[in-house]
Length: 118
Image 1 (cartoon, one colour):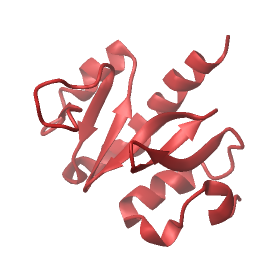
Image 2 (cartoon, rainbow, N blue to C red):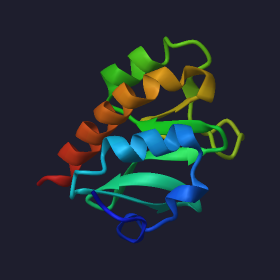
Image 3 (cartoon, rainbow, N blue to C red):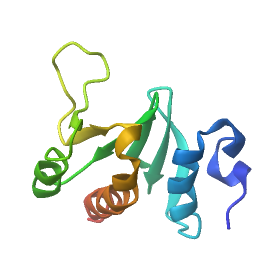
């Protein structure tokens, strides 16, 4: 298990719901928590795949998985500025749908990990 220092942030500062995602990847040496545009995130090989955004979590997903995720109630494209310019490949999943987070985190991890391998 990695320590908070190895994760690059304080676990005590994270909401319990996001801590469960951190714990999901704690034994994976390729994953670290950190910051992405000032937000707490999970990264694989230095690239973000899950980002805490208020009470929600945004995930970077492959097209087919993204399409399935968008069928979940209250899930939408991730538009952190709220200006109608969502990030490509990202969806925002509200805390009310937190039961979907572990599966989407696994999908996001695999998608981003595959992109880091040349």
